[in-house]
Image 1 (cartoon, helix red, strand yellow):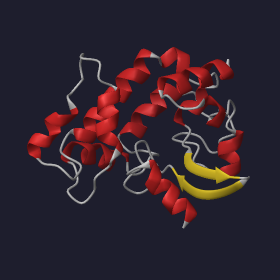
Image 2 (tube, one colour):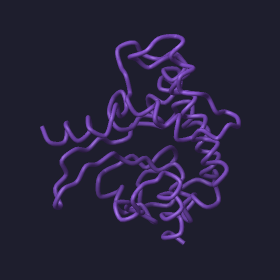
Image 3 (tube, one colour):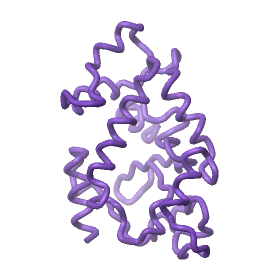
Length: 191
């Protein structure tokens, strides 16, 4: 089951499957000390309450047990004149389907260039959310407790960790402002 989900995730994201590690039971997250998410005390322990993990995901979306989430949601709508994520235009073009919520990447140029424009990041997130929901049953972990599990962004080389950023909340990943480009992550890792 895990291998099937790994293959589907890699295919949907055009990510090389051989570089993807799928952790079916949270052991990797536990070893790295990642937050187990709202309503859990450890990545390896089953939840101790009777509340569905899917129901526990809802408070995380507004920041409960997931610090910074609400601020990141708002950030995606207002933009940031001090930061230009180079990957967003390419992502908008890659997800060009012609159907909702497709937006021509150049449309954002009407409000300026060289920075994160209002609604630009929010549009990418909406497209991603629709993609996830359309493939929900192919992607969700078999262990439902892992639905709220937080992870990390890592750059590894020859068994050494060159860069690590632990997720602090939903949408709070890759670095304090997210990932500007893969080159930036590699530059941080190698410096």
